Every structure is written in structure tokens, then in C-alpha cells.
Length: 317
Image (cartoon, rainbow, N blue to C red; front, side):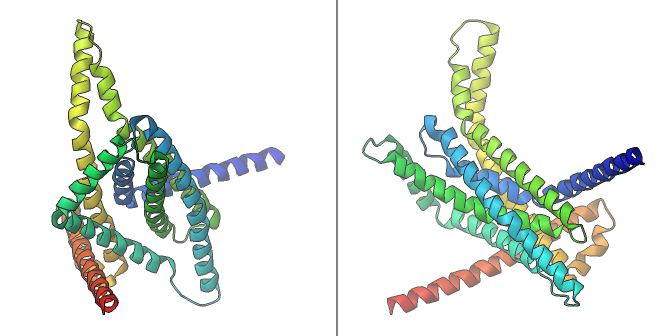
């Protein structure tokens, strides 16, 4: 009996872990847009730091990210538990879905704002980049304060993006047990932190790796290959950053728009018949989600801009 009970327990644990693995994959797929943007934004956040301080800065931001997750995961689980408790007492008050819609809307707004800023304030971005480079080269600049400011900014960015990822992940766990929710959210948080900051650390050191490879002056086939490969890394690194930024922005519209479409029955009914057909239907569904994301983001940006202008006029008066 004891042996059979042990095997039954092992089987239950294996089943639970298998379910958690599947749910983690689903949640990771849903949050791919935010992860891409998180990767690009954090890699950009640590630019402008001296080369020998890049990895320590990434590590400092990663530790701040761990603290962010330690706050966000319990908060998300508490919201889910509260919703379940209210449902058990006859109060069908959705809490997770509105949070998902807010997160999706914010993703769309952030994507449109990024595009608007890129095209309308290009000169400002170039000036800020030049100022950052000048600060690094200026011996009179307090680099400790400069680094701390960069770290604080990156941790704030991480908190917002992590909140979006946790909320979106929580939305995929409807009907699951509390233990499954805990394990899945913890898995997502761990994968997100290790994956993102591991890749960020690799990306910010790409130029150093390229320079190291090109420094081999030996006259051999292997050395020539290393130099050519190093030059390729140095040439492609800026394009990688641009690709990550573009892919992250596009995915924000896809993910954010998809959340809104699936949360608003009227929109979901419009595209659902096409999505069920597969093939081209999947393409039409993604285009529809992206279109909804762009429109929603543009509307929110217009409202936010109008409110900011009204506040500015009141302060001026």
C-alpha cells in the first residue's frame, strides 16, 4: 500500500509538472511580444555605460527585476484568489480579464507612442544619444551617479513590462488550481528573468566579442576566418538591435490587439469565422489583431496627449 501510494504521488507530481510545462509554453507564447520588447528596451537602457561596467549594470538591473517579480507574482496570485473567492460566493466579478485588457491596451499605446516618438522626435533621440556618449567620455561626469540613474530607469521599465507579462500569463490560467498557477507564474518569471538578462548581457558584449576576434593578427586560415567573423559581428550588431526593436513593436500590436479582440465579444465574433479556417485565416486573424492594436493605441495616445495639453494650459494659466 505504501509503495502504491508513493507511485500514485509520483504520478500526480509528474502530471502536475506536465500541465505546468504546457501552460508555461502557452503563457510564453502569449507574452512573446512583451518579451521581445523587454529584451530590446533593456539592451538599449544599458547603452552608454563604459564597456567594463556593462555586465555589472546588467546584473544590477537583473537583481532589481527579481525584486519586481517577487512583488508582482504574489500580487497576481492574490487577485486570482480573490476572484475565485468572490465567484464561490455568487459574485461573478471579473478581475483578471479587465487587468488583461488594461495590459493589452497599454501594450498598444506603448507601441504607437514608440512609433510616434521615432518619427516626430528623431532629432531629440539623436541628441540624447550624443549626450550619453559625451557623458561616458567626460572625465568630470560622476559615472557612479550616471550608472545608478541608468539602473533605476531600467528597473522601472522592467517593472511595467513584467507586470504586463505576469497579467497576460495569469489570463491563460483560468480554471487551473492555485498550485498550478503558482508554479506556472514562478516558471514564467524565472525564464523571463534569466532569458532576457542573459541575452541582454550577450547583446551588449557583442561588440567586444567582435573586436576580440578581429585582433588576431596571425597569418593563418583560422585567424583570417576569425577576423572576418569578428567584422561580421561588428557590422551586424546595430542591425540586430534595430531588428529586436522592430520585432518587439510589431509583436506589441499583435499581442495587445489579440488580448483586446479576445476580450471584446463583438470584435471576437468578427474574426472568429476566418480564424477557424486555418491557413490564410491565421494570417487574417493576426492582421486583424494588429489593426485593432494600432487603432486602440492611436486612440489612447490621442486621449493622453489631449489630457497632457489641457494640464499644460491650466498650469500656464
